[in-house]
Image: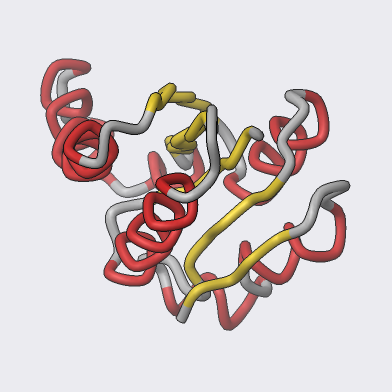
Length: 137
């Protein structure tokens, strides 16, 4: 069974990852697909434009490493999928094309203002993903 978990470094994403790891522990031969989307729309922020690729990679690593470590400690096989673009669109494309059996994600990401204006990533993914989606609060 392929379980995907979408992470962005938020507290809700960490709770989603904990839930995914817990579930994967009870499923034989489960594969945990850890999805991280680099949101390019945030590059409009002037501070991001001045960052080096190395510093951006370090920030990504800080968000991803705790989840990879959690899976490793639970003895769960995990894969890291790094995507670039609009988070909801990229997550939908990935889970719909990769044979994902279940997607687990947090109910809110890091950008509350963008969520209020554009709608939440989790809501968009719920509407368009072809697999069951569990949203963790």
